Image: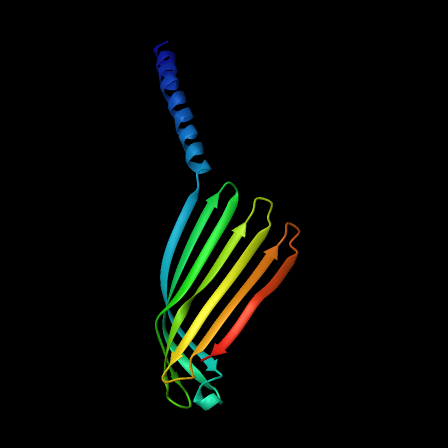
Length: 166
């Protein structure tokens, strides 16, 4: 008989504890989840600058670091991801003239996924190469939108692209 009483006491203590734990876990999981990461990645690329070298253009070897920040939020069956990329200490050298350049700008990618599987991605790219002297600076601006519906049909729009030399 005593074993049965001990079991009843144990159950009367454990059952409310388990119910309370599961209730608190459900409340915690129903709230938004947010994660932010920061990475610093070595970067090297060749970019063509059409206004360099007296208007003849030239390739510029760029090197430095990219700061990549990712921010992920999950809330109410929606996933939002924002990525921001910024060059840090990016410098370049023209392969023909030896002119020095500095890279600057920011690229942002925003991805939003709804509860029925539809998704939208918007990319905004602003990139600048600042060269020595007048007339060899390059500015690139681009906005692209990609939409994916619940049937996985992809629609892509290049909203604008501009490449300016000054």
